[in-house]
Image (cartoon, rainbow, N blue to C red):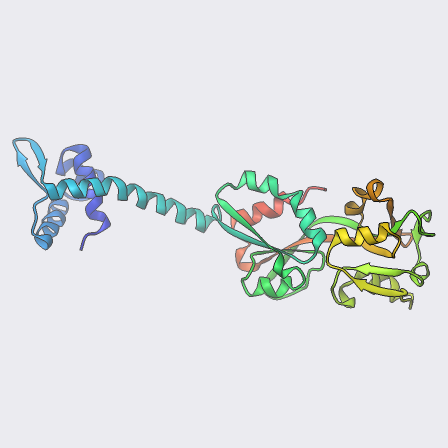
Length: 294
């Protein structure tokens, strides 16, 4: 059987023009090298070279294996480096899932820095898990989850990378427009647009409306952030969105973000990964690249 060490020997013998020198270069004895080549020659019934004075002359079989060695030894060495990079987290494929549309918009402002720093890591954005990211991360369908709602789950690790405030988005035609902050009672007569998740995952309910025993006129779940903003702009209702996202659309759409309560409603963007992947350099690099402010 032709093996990698055969190609190494053939390449070194050609480079150094000597079996003895090749053996020394490969940290082998001369007899070990001669025995390895002789065994290969017997196995296939060919001679790889013969001596002509002090010169080694390659046979056709020897020249074929030499051309193969020139290509394959380099490929093997490259493959070893690549495998080491995989093991060290310098190379790989990182599949990123997001649990909300604002998370995707936030990521687009961050990803360029990571892509430049980690050219050997391919990035895939998986939007199919937008509202079921925890299950996808546990099932190895994604490698990183961007979420505003981390869940304490065995085997998963979440890091907060960006803090922000939620706000109530209103049209300039809405009576709430000139208020410094909204109270729970202010929302009783408002249609409230939210992302399509359960009530237990909506902070505007669990931390604001429910404690005050107040419900909006109607809640309408909407997946598209842009659609929410358009509906608010048309004064069809109000929406709950991150303050940082709304600020870039205020003048264009005639809308404004108002603080939820007089102290605001703080949230954070979190990066979730499996515990086993935390040691990968590119995972650590991604988390670090997302920590700066928007």
